[in-house]
Image 1 (cartoon, one colour):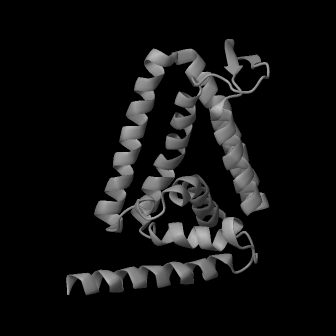
Image 2: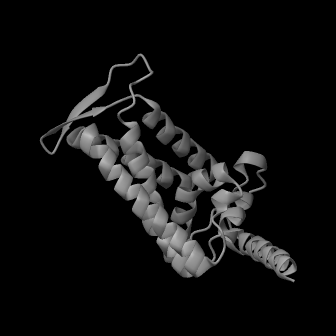
Image 3: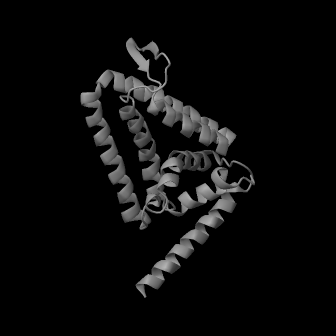
Length: 202
C-alpha cells in the first residue's frame, strides 16, 4: 500500500486488468499464461550455465534430474523475488509456483532432451498464444497489453492471473480496499480507451 514506481501493485494490476476485463478472456489467460512461463523455462534449461557452481543433481520418481544454474534459473528467480516484493502473501505463493516451474521444467527437459523438447515447447507456445489472441480478439475486443507495454505485460501476466484466481475463489486482497480501488482505475482506463476509439471512428 502506498508503493510507487516498479513496486506499485495497484498501477500494474490496473494496467493489466484494463486489457483483461472480459470473464472468458480472463479464464483463457488463467489456463494459458503459466504454461507459457513453464515452457519458456523448459527451453532455457538447455542454455549452458554461466555460474561457476556445481549443478544440483537428485532423483525424482526414479529419474535422474539435474538443476542447471543458468539463465532459466535466473529468470525464475527474478520473477519470484519481484512477485514477493509486490505482495508478501500472494507473491510468496507466486514465488513457489515459479520455483516449481523451474524444477518441473528441468525434470521434463532432462527427460525429453533438446531434439524433442523444442518441439514440445513450440506447440505449447503456439497453442497458448493463439488462445490468448482469440481471447482478446473475440471476447475482449481489445488488443493485448503487450502491444502497449511489452515488459509489463510479460512480467505481470503470471501474477495477474494468480491474483484473479485468489480473489475470485477466496476473496483475497493484498490489503483492504485494493480490489475496489483497482477496479475503479480499470473502468476509467477502459472508458478512456473507448472514448478515444470512438473519436477515431467518427
